[in-house]
Image (tube, rainbow, N blue to C red; front, top):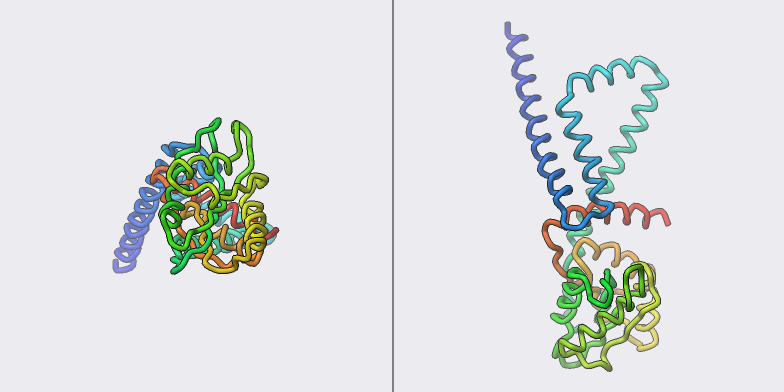
Length: 263
């Protein structure tokens, strides 16, 4: 009788745990799907959280399938390798997330230069995300004494009538930043090129400290890694991402960081 009672208790506990995990994953899945802007992170979220929900719901068949496959040594080895890979990827995602949170805001006491990383322009109109980055840059650069140099980065991509740098330059001038304090770097097409080209501008100006990277919070850590690669010691000031978009961009950023780690 005690054995049966213990077994029943464990079964109920297992059901509770799976239910909680399934509910949390369901919430995250909905968050991915209702995202205002579809990104690669949307599909990662659907696939990942969908798989977790499926395992929780079909726990019995899943366990029976694992036990069946475990009987064959070759399949056992494949399962162990697959499990190790999943564990490694999960660990790296935790590592990335911690660093992304740490790098979201790193104050600089006396800023000398701001690097604003590019983002989508629609025709000649900056996207909402790009405007948020420029507004964050204004918080650092506007009306400061001594004056702060602002480097706006980004070339002209698909669907853009002007470069991202030019769109930012115009916006910042309208908001009161003197034109002579703005340098438009309009040849870059990626985060790495943004940073690389900005580093050359800083070197020409003799600026090696008091540098602030401005981008969205999810993007700051990857920008920081590139900055280190090109010899820039920088703080960070982040534009805040619209909550419905944040999960998908965060998931997409994991993929970018994995790629960055092996290149």
